[in-house]
Image (cartoon, rainbow, N blue to C red; front, side, top):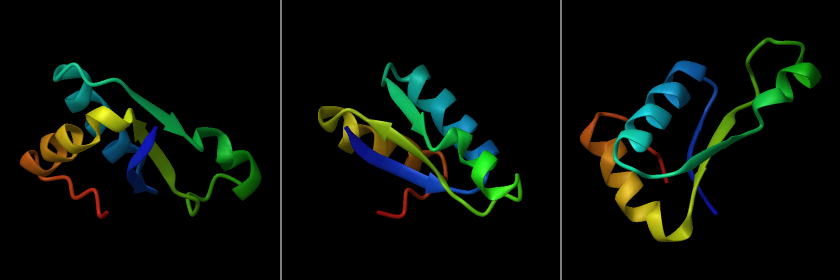
Amino acid sequence: MKELLRTTDPTVIAHASALLQGEGIDCFQIDVHMSVLEGSIGVLPRRLMVRDGDHHRARLVLQDNGIDPGF
């Protein structure tokens, strides 16, 4: 698994996940429950992971839809 996206905005993660699923790319969110540790203030980023073989195509899908993976 490779990290595709890291953000503190849960709406970006949801949008990116929907785009990837629409393209048939499996993805997995991690650090979703970190809000318990941070007190729900939204300072700890969530990460979106994809398979190594899907990483390049997933980056292109996000970029084509205006989401900058940043890596």
